[in-house]
Amino acid sequence: MSVRQLSKSEWQSYCDRVSKGLQGKRAQIEVAALPLGDQVATKWVPIFGITYDPKDDIVDVALEGLDHLIYRPRSVTVDEGATGLSSLEIIDGEGRKQIVKLAELLMLPPPAGSVGPPPGP
Image (cartoon, rainbow, N blue to C red; front, side, top):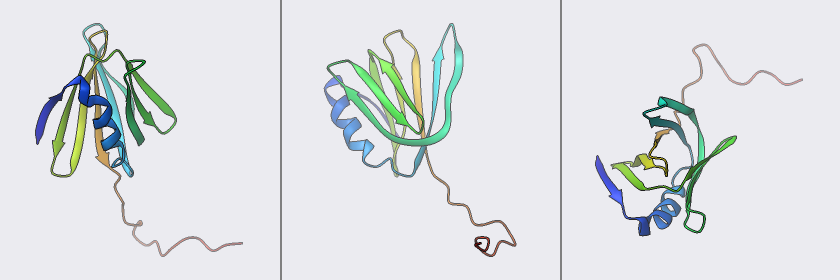
């Protein structure tokens, strides 16, 4: 695994590049701050993309049914492995850690005894 902090000038292009490889992945977002403790904002939902808008200074994590917005990010740290991005840690404008963890969508075999879809009408 390789952990590195991105310079602010890299944020937009990095997000654009990794968003192309997020198909079939799920994300869990954790928010950590002293007054809050650790909170799970979302649990393993499909992720569509991550963008950084320098004009409005917002990171947008687009998930199924939710846009998780991170305002005035101070730093972006990425954890990359052999299969690509595994997590991002973004410190927001209020000093909260926003941790986006990524996982592959698991393709499970059908249950034992299952022979296929039920017959039609």
